[in-house]
Image 1 (spheres, rainbow, N blue to C red):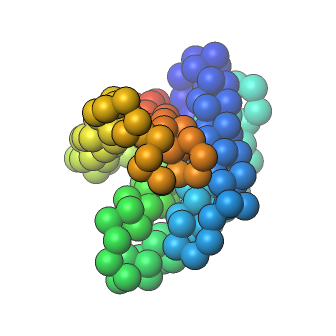
Image 2 (tube, rainbow, N blue to C red):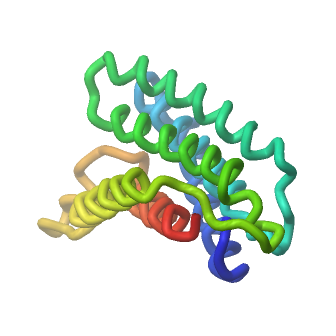
Length: 184
C-alpha cells in the first residue's frame, strides 16, 4: 500500500494480531461461529499482507492477482453463506469484495506507484462508498464496546472468553480497511 512506512507496519501488526486472535478463537468455536472466525482470520492476515509497505518489500506483480483470486473465492463463500440469512456474513461479503477491489486497483492503476511512477488506482465513487460503509461499521461496532451496565460485556456470551476483544478486533480491522482505502 501507499503511505508512510511506519503507518504501514502498524497496519500490518494490527491486522496480523486481529487475524491471530480470530484464528485462536476457532479452537473454541464450532459451526457458524467457527466459520465466521476463520473468515475474519483470513481477512486479518490478508489485510496484513496487503499493508506491508512497498518501500520495504515491493510485492511482485502476481501478488495482486493472488489476492484477487483468494478474496474472490472468499467472496463466493460469503455469498453462499449470506443465503443462510445472517447479517455478519453480509459484512464478510463486503469485506472480501473490498479486498478484491483493492487488489485489482493496485494491480491496475496503483501498482506503478510502488515504483515511483503512476497514480494510485481505484474508482472514486466505489472507494468513497466503501469508506462510508466502513466508517458506519466502525462507529456502530465501536458503540457496542461501551458498557451499558457493569456486567453487560461479560454476560453477552459472544466472542469467546473476552467478547470485547472480538469486538475490538472487528473495530480495528474496520479502521484498518479505512486506512487502506485512503492509502490506495
